[in-house]
Length: 348
Image 1: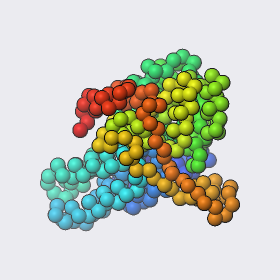
Image 2: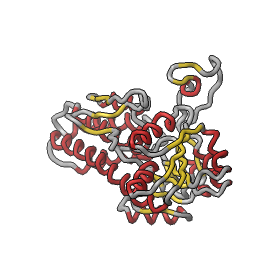
Image 3: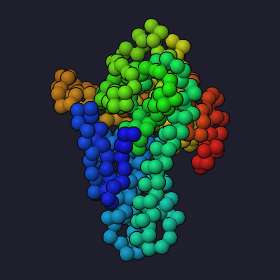
Image 4: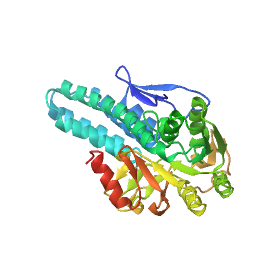
């Protein structure tokens, strides 16, 4: 299994996703600020992976705090948590992980050394929990996959977007493990090409039959009857089932609805944000214009040209067939079904 990020010898180790597929290199972060930078510059990306990275980074930062008392430790710890909270505004898993680490701090008694050990243990637990959650998402979702299905996916919601195994691609993996034959159509996913670089790499790595297409080909394939299902991930899901995911997801969902293709979202419960009534309240990150103007350092557009570069869009719940979580599958009406799954999953 591809391991995206993990703790080793008091350091955070992660695969550098900026270099894929050309080079497989792991980055070793020994300072929490390096983890902050890795989240910002997309060395690590994908909502669950961002959450895990934040937890591990906070634990790493905690080890560096020179304090002899809990009172001295507290302000430095909260500053580190705040730094991680400011890295990526859309991914709910980031804030969920920070909250988990803050709760661990609040509930741990003893010396500063005890607190540091507890924070490291909690972060490592979240890594293993994330993999187990993704495998459970795969087990629930594989029942939706039929023999011979042709599945389209957008962006990368695979092992690289989590600590391992993946969400949308986790369902595909689980169906393959069950012996089902299938074929994956991979949207390239402009402007960062997470599909072309990352999803295609994962599919090739694991020998899963797949075909790369440009984003604008998705509708044509559906119209030709060559797509049986769409499965994507999510960065945040509102109470009504509106989904924030990589830019271009909304277009895919509309095309799926028009062509009668089921549109599934795979995400852990930690991606749900039931404090938000609808997707209109989800903060959308805007990223550097150079992501659109350049590809791998080579300019593809005129200099000083105006750019609009939102990293995510909102897919209204009316386009979503079902949301697959580790606690089961939610179907409309999502206001009811998502809350029920949260209760079943034992989450607050």
